[in-house]
Amino acid sequence: MPSLFSSAQLLSLVLFVTLSHVGVATIFAAMWHTHRQIRALIYWSAGELVIAGAFCCLLLRPLEGNASLANILCTNLLLMSTTLLYERGMRYFFRREADQLGWLLPAVTLGGFVLFALTALQQPLFDVHSRIIVLSGVLSLQIALLIWQLWRYQRLAPVYRVLRFATLLLGLQLLLQLLRIAKHLWQPELAANSFTDPLLGPVILLSLLFTIARSYLLLSLVHTRQQQALLATQRKLERRANQDELTGLFSRHYFERQVALRAREMASPSQLLLIDLDNFKQINDRHGHPAGDAMLRAVGRVIANTLPAEGMAGRLGGDELALLLMADPQTLPDYCHSLQQQIAEATRALAGGPISLSIGLTSLHPDEGFEAAYLRADRALYAAKQAGRQRACVQALHHNEPQPLPPCALLS
Image (tube, rainbow, N blue to C red):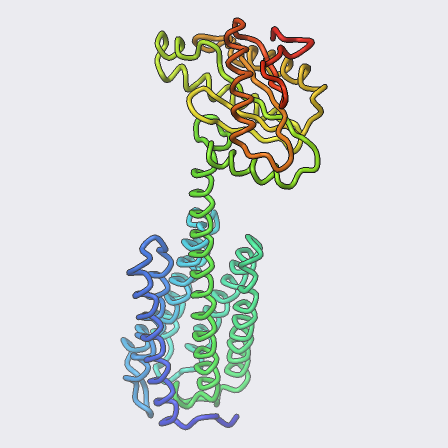
């Protein structure tokens, strides 16, 4: 079988590939220096340095004649370790360090090297065929396991489907290793040493191609991971800005902004409810602020779970809550009554419970600002408190005085 390269050309190719691996290792190490949280990068960098070391050992071999036993063992130990390091890096990247089958590839690598060492020790050093068959067999098993792992990982999320391209390249490497085994089994006259093996050049070329593609894919994965982290941080910051941490309801700023937006878009009036927890200050004074916080959390959960469709709720500050309901005013008495009952039940076992509500209501008209509606609802809320609390009052747009909400002005 004719070789694609002469021995001297192979030396140049091996040198170029060695430098390429060192360059990729440097890139991964530099990225790890600025992204220490991605431990996979240091494993991938080490993998590139290890395979560069294997090619350095290959460069030290004579073009003709036999390599030393130490060189043979060192070269192939480094080659077998490369896949192990990359696979370990993938486990860290995809957070699968504790995988139950994590022992499989290390076992194959260790067993393969022991078998290779025994073959090299028992066979004459000039018998390169047995060594190539064992090495290619071990590498084939490693590649097959890596393909299986990547196939599992690419199913974790749609963004990881780019790993299918890596499995395709690994499949080509596997095919070439199997072809190498077959050639050396049936045509033992193929090579007198490594540099005269006609399949060594294609193996190295494909290794170079895979290194380039693998580096691109891994860097793409790292970029995707960083983008996901940035988006998660952005969502977290938005949630902190838009959501009250204690009650889980919207913050005052976000609630007011959303009310203003909806007022411009809605075709019919909506209902604004201001809610105060009756005697909430006494709960804080008698039982402490943790008891008050527990009360607010319980009330927030009830409101969130009972909020009608298209409704929204926010905490304006302290124990003052606000709801915006896209509802007919005729349904408000029943809603307020039900809300009071459920909150009383949810807070019955808490310190200072059960707690009652005072509610002020008004209609929010299209194109009306939040402040105007808020002032009317606040007047209604004040009237409910003055009337003895545990009540709901409504402030109509054209009425001077708030009116009790029929038929359940007294919430019970």
